Length: 409
Image (cartoon, rainbow, N blue to C red):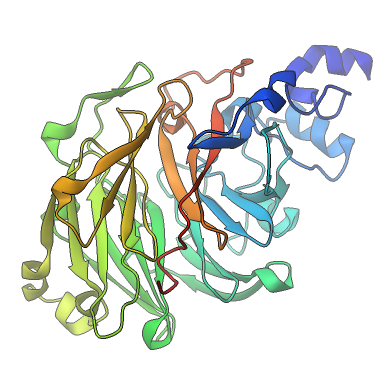
């Protein structure tokens, strides 16, 4: 065993007696944005040491290819998605313990709800998950729809898991190819609307067929809206993050939903990744399938204004504060949707740690979470990813005193 440990070095630190975390992690002082978890690479709670080494030897697990994107909080757990942008991703949905103090380093990820659903290559299993959302009843809505490579031939799907019953599957919906392409679709982010039997609004970041997907749980049906505002803005290309220029024309990506206020319509806010414009549209338009499949709905798209820079993730709290990532600025912006967009401000920046801030989450204790993940290195197969002593992935926590858009003020 000693020879195996010496050979794999860092990769076996959680199986060969290396400490789980660096000595300096306890000395990190609490700041506005506190790092509660960080990883040099992702590893998992394998069923056995044999299964771990077997996966390594057969390239079913390639540590340097694993990178987290989505993050959500529930029941003392942090749920993470690990899309299969590259080979060697053993689990595409997992969780770790929610850390209440200090910084944990390289904590093992536990596949969720189990190993079987993650490694099952039949279409019933999770193929490649980019993001998810958890409603107030404890149901996790998982969008399994990264279809931008040859990792799977299965259609994109939405799976609802009951977190109160250990992630038991209670609903599954396969998206038709005309809604989300089996070859080229990219279900990127999701927000939930509990009205009228439940709706999900999902961004399709597909460069072939970008759009905004509406799914009605009550009707078990989906439809898709397509508009030029969902496309990338060519003038916004070329921004640089950690020395890598972003020259791709990446379409609609971030999405956020305004909180429910009596006698007021709700709005979905969205933006392209390659873009600085922020748009909104009423949910009453989106939920009307007949109207949204006509040409008239487009006149209801509102151009809100321009952000300070290109963004990936968006989220709105129950007081109407929109938080958004600022990729080339290595920071987080904030703007209240009830005010003029000129009142926005940058609330945090850090070029060393906030490298490609991606997805947000909120808990019920007044904390906002955001994951930074260097994902621009992983989504481009031409870039050689390597493991080093530097942390590549971090989860930040920031106290807002508010809750998510699903709750009233």
